[in-house]
Amino acid sequence: MNLSDIRLGSLGSRWGRRLPAVSGFNEIIGAQITLGGVASIDQGPFAFGAIANPIELQFQTHSITARYSDEYQSNSLAWLAFTREALKDSRPMTDWERKASADFFWSQFD
Amino acid sequence: MDLERAARESGVVRPEHVTQLIRSLKLRDYRWIVCNPSSAEPRLQGDLILQIPVAVIDPAGKARSRNLTAMVLNNACDLQSGRSEFISLAPVEDFSAFSEAMLNKDRDQARQYLNSLQANQIDELLYLQRSPQLPNGGVVRFDLISSLSATVYESAIAGSRRLASLTQNGFYLLLMKLTHFLARPESAEIVRDSQAQL
Image 1: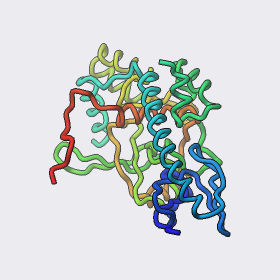
Image 2: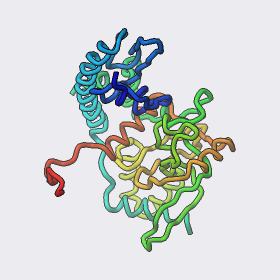
Image 3: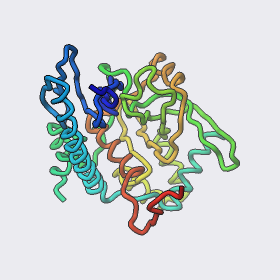
């Protein structure tokens, strides 16, 4: 079994750390791997299930990657749409506001 | 645009928080953003730290630093001890002093500015309403983000200089403001090269 790509945890996980792992796989979110030849993926929004042998693990990881990519894109677009709508009345500072705010900031260094 | 549906599908706002978040956002009364420092988590994104060095390069190219109240911008995961060498901070102005300075410059322009600010409608700023932790209110300056050695941050934590944490909804608002200010889609009028020249 090629253990070159698996990462345990996620990019944002407090406990995340990289482990040598299975090829053809980019990222597991919230994966938990148990010893003794059984891998279980039991957390995270993208994948569920238990994998009992290395061959099945390789098969599963390809489909996880595809689902992860689709959901990630969809979530990102929904988040951008949400922030845009919720902050639709937000605007950048005017020139006067930018200058006045900068003057106030520097005045604290005098 | 269905705000609730977008929030639910975002993967950022937990389903059980969606209704309350949307209700809070409609209030335009921002007392819900800040609370006492979390006792469960010693390091959180959005924590306010007292008397911590903020450094900015002045127009002459000189580094200037001063101890101010500042908001921690790193994700909580990256704030764990030994995880990062540097911490990103945004200074927090005292709202009373800030608004007085604006009014002294130009009363009419300042009123318009402060109204927008207090409605949290200025991209570069996050308004923090008066609270027990911030009796004069605060203005988080996303236009003045700076970096700090994690060692200095750790000594501030050890010295009990955490002033406040963000509530759950306050945290979502911080993410929304950061996304809107720093990670919104670029204008279609901006044209970039599609390939690197190798």
